[in-house]
Image: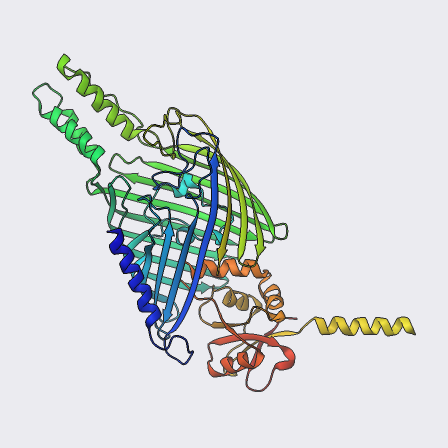
Length: 416
Length: 130
C-alpha cells in the first residue's frame, strides 16, 4: 500500500511537472512550487517510554532522536485559469508506520466560485484544529510543534472528500468558513487501522484586528480494524460471556468498548493574537467517542514576545481523560477461570489506561534568515497517576507510571 | 556656512532615502484604505490580486513595513500559512515598477506598489503611504 501510495504521489507530481508550457509565462497553466522542512533533534531524561508525536510508533528517549520532528514537504500548485487550480503536497516524515516513505498528504482540485466561495475536491488537510493545515510547517508556528496535549488527540492529518470555503470581509472583520465532508484512515506500524468515515464538519474563523477567533466541530463514525491486540481482547470477553457461568455482562462490555463504526465527535474553540510584539494563542478541544478510545479534553495557552528576531515563549497545556481509565471486572465464578479473568481484566485496563498529562513548556524562536527559523524548546511533562500519558511504551520498556519527564528539543525550520 | 551646507546635504540624503510609496491600481479602480491594502497584501482580502516587487528591491521591505507594520520574516510566515493551507498563492513577483504598472493597467483587480515618482497616466494612485 505504501509503495502504491508513493507511486501515486510521484505520478501526481510528474503529471504536474510534465504539463507543457510551464516554464513560460504565456497564459498557459502557471506552476508554483514551494516547500518546507524541519531538521529537529529531541531527547528526554527518561528511557522508560518514548516521546513521540502521537501516531509515531517510537521516538525519543535518553539518546538523541531525529525522527520526532524532522520532515520535508514539497507542494505544487498548478493554476489553469482564474477559476481552476490543482494542488499536490508530498510529505516525508517519520510516519505512523514508522517509515519515511513520502506520502501524498494533499491532492485536490479547486474551483473558485466568485469572490467569496471556492470548492475543493480530493485529499485535503483535516481541519480539526486551529493550525491543522500548517501543523507540519514549523516555520509558520512559534513553537517547535503544536502542543501535543491538544494536537495529539487526533492522528488523522488529512481526509478524502470535499469542502466549500467561504471568505469575506464584514466591515473590518475578515470571516472565513469551511464546510467539509469525507473520510480518513491511518495505518499504524502494528497493522491496526483507525478509520473515520462519514465525517461532516464546519470550521469558522473571524479576524478582528490583531485577534483571530476560531470554532470548529466535526463528527463521524470511528472504527479500528486489524488490531490484533484489540481483536484478541474482544474475542476473549465474548468467549467468556458465552460460557454458562453468569458472566454475560462481559459481552456488552466488549460491545461498548469496540470501535466498530461508533459515533465520534471533535469540537474546538481557539483564539490567536498578534499585537505589536505580543503573540499568543489558546485552544480548548474535546474528543468524544462511544468506544474504548478515551473521551478527552485538551487545552493550551501560549504567550510570547518578539524582541527583534528573537521570540521567547511559554506554553501551558493539559490533556484530561474524561472517561473511565480502569474497570473492575467480576471475580472468576469458578477457579478454572481465574487466569483468564485476570488476563481479560489486564487487557481491559491497559486499553482504558489514562492518556492524560499536563505540560509546562518554554522555548525561543530565532528568525535567523527570512525563510529560516531556529528554535529550542524545553517541555516538562507530567502524566496522570499510574499512566504514561501520550508517551509510547514499547516492548521491553517499563512505562512512566505517573513519573514526569523533561523533553529537550532543537529544530531548524525552513520554507522556500 | 559650512555647517549649513552639511545640514542641507544630510537633509537631501534623508529625503532621497525615504521613498514615497504609492499603491496603484487600474484607472477604473476605486480607492483603497491603508487597512484594505494591508489585507490584500497579507492574503486576507481576496477581492484583489496583489503583485509584489522582487525580493531584492529595497522598496519591498519598506512597503510592507509601512502598509502592514510587519517585517519581511513576518510577511513570509503569513504567506507560508496561506500557501501551505492551499488557500492562497503568494503575490507574483515582478522585476520593476514598469512591470507593476503594466500588470495593473491590464487588469482592474490587480494592485501593486511603486515609487511615487514612477506614476504615470496608465495607472491610478489608490492610496499614498506617506
